[in-house]
Image (cartoon, rainbow, N blue to C red; front, side):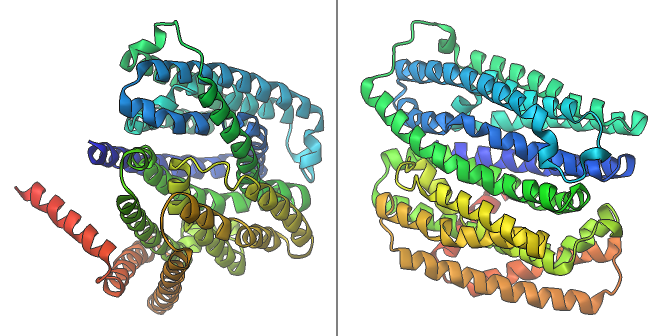
Length: 507
């Protein structure tokens, strides 16, 4: 049952990811053709500014999801009702808090922007972004029950449906009126409708949620949630600054036009990373169930398989980005939106370092190890912000990327695996780093080789050369990975699974 639900979650998440990619990139093409580049910068800036405010989430959702795994496995309806009632009250409070604190920022918006005169009605645009985030908390807590119950594929379906509606509506607005204010208004309208529809769906699936008479949380559970929330709030601060810091620093110290160009690269990388994370994290609830009911050997085996898949995916994506990212940007929005190649290379390296943490993070969250590394993200956040500001003044965008990378290597890179392997999975940390560096060496050599071959074959950027480059990257990177690691236990296991799957299809 657990395997079936995990497979279903992965399948629907992957489909949603591909469809969303197509829609987002289509909408961005129309965006850059219909609006000045500074509006791209505003989009990225306000998205990240509101993300900073969402630290008010306090990690309540993550803590409650972890505590839902056991009641769902035991079919303990009363415990589920109690936890969901607690989550509802917490999320309504959080949504109101985000809106209230966000309104206090309105008089100070110009502080975050260098040369803000190019954009009018900043307050209205910001208010829409603020309400879009704050209001979503009033219903979105119900999504967490779907995720904890290994039914995130239902959530994926509704995300795809409403993203389709949103992007199509925004494209029509831009083509017809070239009006950014109507464009951003649709964010709020669609968010409200999506959350209302998902809320009703959850009510029908879990009718006991509306029965009332919820029992208060037990003292033990309340203490456990409170302890985890304290830890997660520290982690969230670091995570939010990780994704917000670069855009905020570029907007403040370099300018909106540069941020607009940088945001295109960020969108490509973020879309890939988020999509793969959505697919990989769709098995978090299944891993949570595994950790609750299985022995140590099974945990280690599944972790190694996930780590191996993580490394494989990281290689395919990094090779593709290294060889083709600038070509894609040129074909997509034009040569005038290209960054210096040195900046692009460091951006891709920082992506790889971040992406390779995912297997550890999934198991760490599923194990509920929020308290164990509670100070890591605070150290990371302070380092990231400080280094990015200092280096941005001297090296521009490149300095922002270096600040991000250095702070990650000094904190997350070693703390997260140390916590996981000392508190949940019985595995030696030296084996983790041995695998990490093996994967990294294969990835770097593969990327350099394919880039050299691609440059030999094509000296101009065309759609044909790009399509051939995609095929080249996929084919060679996969062949090299399979040949190098063909004798590993994880590869043998995955080969057996693939053969079994193909056999079922033919049968």
